[in-house]
Image (tube, rainbow, N blue to C red):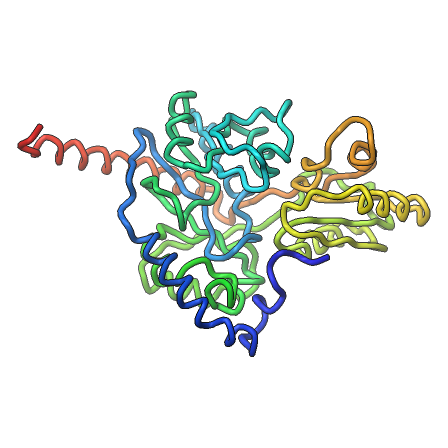
Length: 353
């Protein structure tokens, strides 16, 4: 199986993307208009939005986690706001990582909730209100840049240096979520992850628009010495499985078997049984991502067995400039103060009040 993103999205534009151009134009008009309409609710606390230009795979969640840690180091109480993609709950919910399942709240919220207060809501204004009621004094949005009806004070767009924005076309002809000029107008800064050059055109466009650029890289966060030289079966259901397989190779492990699944995929029993049987027969160590691991349900049954036998290769974001997280947070807080001051001034000048 492959990722949900069609392979042609990450190749030079060809016949398929050209054939889909009319649909992309229509999608882009709707998405762009939605982005540029006036946001409807301003939170009483600062709002930092972590987004990306494309559909999945850029590194939003590790970035959100890193900034939450930096916020806590400053004495703030950050709260994550997520749509809860992949979960079944359709009501605003505070995520409890000890009791909720990925099937209920989504895999990324479970990871976020281990670090800080996390609320999922398909209505982000309602979710933001819940976070404030729960005591958050900083809201970190994990995605929602293109669709939120919530005023954000700082928008940090994450871009992968290896994949960039793919063929540069808007969905469905490519992976871009809305026309790039529209997205850049609402972007505060870019975070490039990695050192390759696929993101350079977007970075140059952002520089021309006066947007700040930060840089970071992904690093393994655990002790994987035991994997050095070990044959493994690596499986991943994320937007960019190849990124994970490269990380596995960096540990010194030898990938004897690999399994690719769609992003947020919940494994079926036959898929689990196949991996368990293969690993046992070939003497392979099972390895996966943190996001895939939280989707496995502990306890009895095949899912529990796979979870107990699988090693997690976790990664974290490290900024090239150690002062970058503090700079992002400072800008967010400053913009929020200015927003509230402007709002108060407008209210005081309103003759109806």
